[in-house]
Amino acid sequence: MIKKIQLPLQTLNLIVGFMVWVLISSLMPFIKEDIAIPESQLALVTAVPVILGSVLRIPLGFYANQFGARKIFLISFMLLLFPVYYISIADSLVDLLIGGLFLGIGGAVFSVGVTSLPKYYPKERHGLINGIYGAGNLGTAVSAFAAPVVAENFGWSTTVQLYLVILAVFIAGNFLLGDKKELKVKAPLLEQVKSVYKNEKLWLLSLFYFITFGSFVAFTIYLPNFLVANFGLDKVDAGLRTAGFIVLATLMRPIGGWLADRFHSLILLMFVFGVYTVSAMILSFAPSIGWYTIGCLSIALCAGMGNGVIFKLVPMYFQKQAGIVNGIVSAMGGLGGFFPPLILSLLFNITGHYAIGFMALSEVALASLILVVWMYFQGKMGLAKEVIDNTIEGILITDTSGKIISVNPSFTRITGYQENEVIGKNPSILKSGRQPQTFYEELWKSIEINGFWQGEIWNSRKDGQQYLQWLTISSIKNDAGDVVQYAGMFSDISSHRVKKA
Image 1 (cartoon, rainbow, N blue to C red):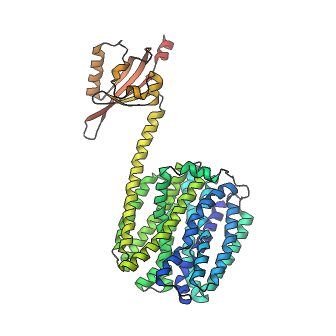
Image 2: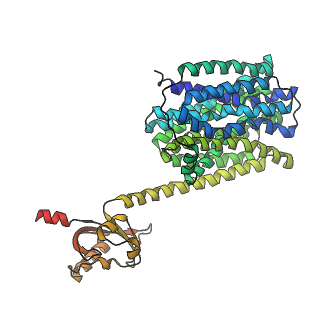
Image 3: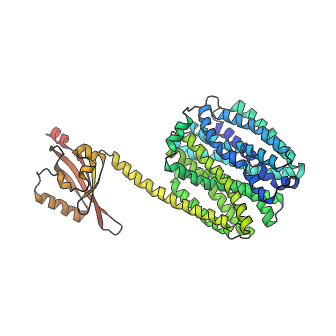
């Protein structure tokens, strides 16, 4: 029973964590009426919770593996009580910065669930499960929609204090319903970091999540105040539109995970970054509210879908280090939500518009699209090489002049020749002398006419021992139909001949 409720419980935990995480940005239109905040500092105040929310994701993902999700959620929610109360009585910019920094704990709990929940489900469901858990992003929509409505009637300070009640309820819920017997994985933090930090896929996934989750967070904290200041919307209307952005992105996250369980994840990411490129370009032209809405909602769709797909890829590439990798990737995503609002604000102060910032997003998305395409084709080539290196048949590749350009490990096992001894040589070094010249002439004639030859042939090993092999030679052609290489695949069948005799 306890295990079955972990998915809904931890998803609700994430909703609460994210509600707290974006508390300041959701209430900023109200807070700045009571606390003097320079326009140049608004972006910093709303973005500062992202700092700790990003950095803490790495240790929280690691400790969730060591101590279980129950303890980490309990400690996190108890710690959040202090900054939430502190913000409710804040009366200066410094108070907001200090309290806001520690609100980051709410965003950091994301890495707890993505590390814990896959332990309860088979691998083929990890994309969907992480997608459902990631729907806890809905917490940002709850705050963006509900907090302004409550603040309109009761004031922003009282609204913040209501979050203390919610946290208390979930502290009790995790204490009673959290899984005390969750499978623990103990390994030194430094050892896990060393095992993954040189892997290029870690940093590529981090870049992709920096864009997808980063844009989700950035738009969440940036839109409420931006819509009021630039389009003249009232505070509740701006909150509702921001909530719409968040809801769409949140709903697309489990759909992205579900799609990644059924289709090639990298092809899905090609679609995501292609649409990102176009959408950010639309926003860069400072459009009307209608076009701005289309651009934002397109980014919401791609952000949610991309978030779900990326966390399907993490356990695929890092089965044994999923905890630390989840932490690093999600930390980079959080930082992706910290820098863009600051950069946009800086560019606006310098140029008077946001065009350069959105164009930069478009260009980074385009670069990511190129990298995803590269990963896709590199993966195909890597798979082909893995198959060749692990097959029991010997394989050699020659160019059209007959020089050997590649061999696999089984070639060395069967013939005794090391790779460096045969590269650049002609396969004739393997001849046994048993077949007449006419045999080879017929062999190449068959390849020229049919594209392949297959049959028995006697060859010699490096030590001079002759053996019978079953050999297939195929011509490899390019798209124009021209032969560019020849591939030979063979196996030693001497023992079969002896048994038959």
